[in-house]
Length: 96
Image (cartoon, rainbow, N blue to C red; front, side, top):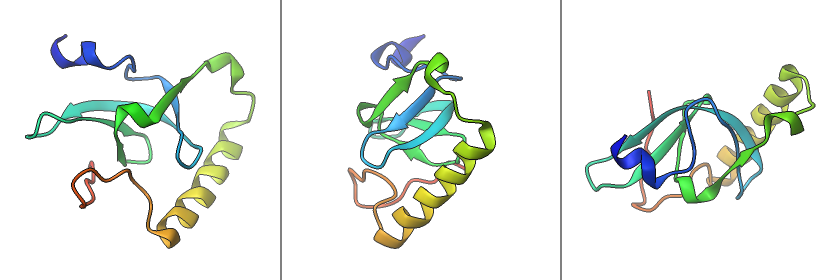
């Protein structure tokens, strides 16, 4: 398990990014060369785990398409406002 123990988020969990309300499914959890842990969501962006909250699957009542629409809209707004990711180092960290 290793560093996964430090994060109570698992691959496959649904999470919400608390700064913007962006929802997504966790596809990967990785550690960078500085020892920082990043959670990769299905929008191919990496987030710091302390800013994510796991959503109980039973609380997700929206259809998948609705979630996708909301996420797209939020991403567009976030890109325009330049606050897509919580940046500890001042540079973006793409996952793919």
